[in-house]
Length: 443
Image 1 (cartoon, rainbow, N blue to C red):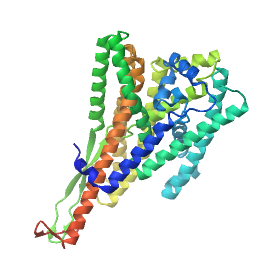
Image 2 (image 1 turned 60 degrees about the vertical axis):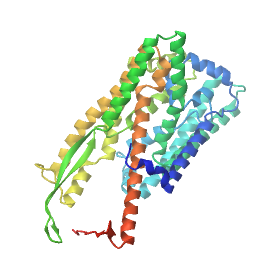
Image 3 (image 1 turned 90 degrees about the vertical axis):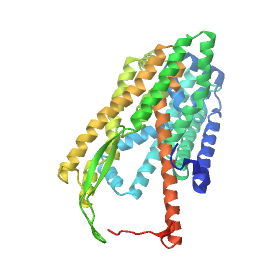
Image 4 (image 1 turned 180 degrees about the horizontal axis):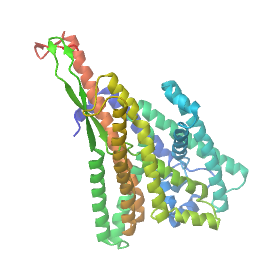
């Protein structure tokens, strides 16, 4: 139990944020069942069942089942993630974008605007290509440019609406809206897949022993993720002795915690979004060459797993370098008089942080790749393919990671609110707490 979590319902602002988040997620889940006009949904579901062993299953997982219904949210948040990756990759190499990143909030707002515009353009392109694919597969009720334009605009509007929902959850809710939307799409399909797996074991289509091993392996995967996500490397930071009101204070030693998985759930989300993109563009094509390419990119194949692992390593190092700047941290420590024992302040400290961060990132990337690949391969070898998509390593890592991050944000909010109430009570009582006047040492 997290500290103070029992008092979550007693804090009006936090209660309001939780209700807003749940309400917006309910709107998102409702839109998953609103189909795009002009589509033969029955034929689409039949084709989806025959192609569930390809990237269709992965696309459907990230869209929360929207692809199966071909809803207005079929594209999901994937275009936004893809454009975000492109913007972040181009920022260090384009001086104008790098200058915007350094301008603080104003620059970030402009970069966000560019990301939104790019998302609209990419969604329009993907929607039009999907409409062409649907026509080639005879899955439409009417063909022509009007249908393609209507499908492209409808899917783009759905993506824009999801993007807006994510921003509202971030501003008025309890956390990162994009991650929570992906989390909701995955969790929504877990109960039905869990029950269908049990039914498969009862009917004998899958051996009960295989289902038991599947559940046991899933529990072990969750335990391993929680253990590693809570692990960190503590770097000691020494501060010199300082003068206080009545003498000299002792030197203080604090610790800077660096997580083993600094990048969190971003690398598998980015890697999956890039691998899902070919399915959006080529999945409805009848060309034999393109169909063969998609077979090589099917989850569980050697080519898919190698590309997936390579992308995870790439995005782990890339995103870690964005969220933790060794030069900046070393400079701040130097300004505040802090230093790492046995390491000189300034550039040597930055080089030390860089070396530690690289070693941690290597182990973190290996951990993410293992968690995302091994469970999926194991589940497919046991014959539970649908379970492999919804309870696979990527999905479980996202679910557990977002849950831990959201719980940490709620805990931080509760602690900060309790601290504010503590200070307000102290101020109202004239500095007297518990019948004794508090003494404040000023540095």
